Each structure stands twice: as C-alpha cells, then as structure tokens.
Length: 161
Image 1: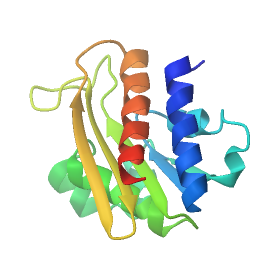
Image 2 (image 1 turned 180 degrees about the vertical axis):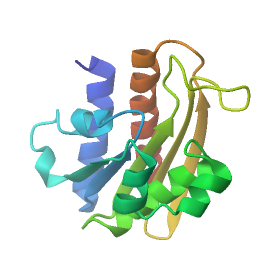
Image 3 (image 1 turned 90 degrees about the horizontal axis):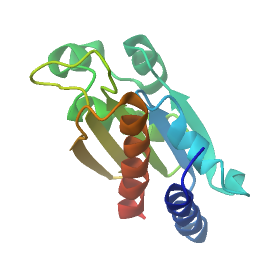
C-alpha cells in the first residue's frame, strides 16, 4: 500500500521517537487514518504509536480533540488554527508527547477559489511547541493528495524530533 520511501519515513519517525522515549498520536481528517496506518506498518510500532483520532466531521473534531465551534466558524475546517488545535488536542487527550494533525481538501469536489482542492494544513505538536505547514498540492487526484499529505505529516513530525 505504501511506497518504500514512505515506509522509510515512518521507520525514521519510529527510530527517533523510540530513542527519545516519545509516544505519538495522530489526528486526521482528509487522510482518514493513513498516517496512523503508515506508522503501524513498522514492526514494533506499539512502542511508539499510542493512538489515532480520525475526525472527519466537525462534530468529531469538537468532541474528540476540543476544536471549538467558534474556531471552525471563524477560520473553517481547513485552516492553520484548526490544524494546530487538532494536534494540540491530540497531545492533550492522549498519553503522548508528540502529535500530528492533517486537515485538507482532497477533492474532487469541495474546493473554492480561496481553498482549492489540494489545500492541506498540517500541524505537529510537542509540549510547548507547535509547528504548522500549508501545502497546495493542486488537483492531482484524491489518492495522490492524501498520500502526499501523509508524507508531509511524517516530515513535519521529524522536524520536532
């Protein structure tokens, strides 16, 4: 299912997190659990991976991760503030020290002029620090956007490790 490069990224996250004694959680929307799936491809992943939140709906984001209705209304689901809150919420609601969140528009519909298909916000959180990246992958197809988002999420995690 995943490429050799993607497996290598997951192995690197696993190795660095294990050496530092860190556990990881994911909070995913448009990737639907693919980041968690890739991390659990690694043998022994239970040493590092603690849980994954698949929060596809806004209601799930609010209930499971503590994203406020006000934040969603003000900035929209696919935004930097929501991605940051998703990552921070996963960190707060798990026994982990590191979390990554993905929210975006994978298409083929759902995009707009200001938020086109392929727009993805990714955030990674560690106590006292949250990183964010905005990606505009373009309308390259739903699966390609989702897989590119998974890779970007792991690369962002590596920056915090």
